[in-house]
Amino acid sequence: MKTLIKKYSYFLKLSLLVLLLTFTNEGQGQLPDDEKNYVSNTDVGMGKYLTKSLKKTRKVVLTFDDGPHEKITEQVLDILYRYNAPATFFVLGKKITPETTPLLERIVRDGHTLASHGYGHDEANKQTEITFKNELYNSFRQIDDIYGNNSRASYYRFPYGAYGFSPDYHHLNALREISHKLYQQNCINFVFWDIDSQDWSPLLSADQNAQNIISNIDGGTYYNPKKTTNFYGKREWIIEKYPIKNPIGGGIVLMHDIRSKTVEILELFLDYAARNNIEIIPLDDMKEANEYHRFCK
Ligand SMILES: [Zn+2]
Image 1: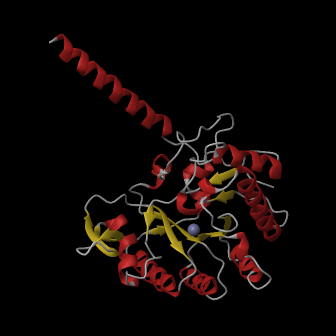
Image 2 (image 1 turned 90 degrees about the vertical axis):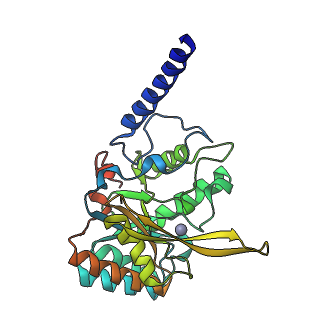
């Protein structure tokens, strides 16, 4: 009996701890903590940074990664304009050229948010500290050139959402340090996503990709591309279909403005959103960013 009580109290303590941790994360901003020294292999994963404030709100934030793309970004901007919908573009420094700069200027002029996705899309965990910091620094300098002296909320998204596993430095400490160097304060938010459209996969139709966004808001089928080993021992991609019965009902949507299919997906989704009272809001409006709102200059 005694051991049973002991066992129980252990589980009780454990569940209390989990509960406490859950509440501590509630309402947390997506800004590196001002003081904390983040530790590799411990402070990892995007799970704790899901956008709690948008859950069940039927509000979504649209984000586009890996651009700008001379043709696609322009088409995406045209559709957003037609539906009067705001979006955020996480651009790659290496794609910012004299040819694409007018597109970045239009992103800002149209009232969207221009944000950094780093320079060359390398996975941060595989980069040395000096390379990671240099690329981060330079990519924000490029974006600052577009914004000019206007103060603004500042955002960064890790390629693949991957960070925190480099043995000799932690990316959130580095992000804060670069922010201080650029703006004399800790003001760069990091942003992940809650709803993956899987638009990168050529296996899915535009309809299925749009459905992936919709099913996370209103329930329905989700189409997940997955690598698996077939009967002959060969690796191949399959589409895993599963129903979402308890959708999160709002959040940050991940798309990529580098393929023409994404233009179709966007239009399909915005059409559905307009007919079904789904609100598209700017990234600046989500509580996780504006609770700790600091403008970078
Ligand atoms: Zn990316």
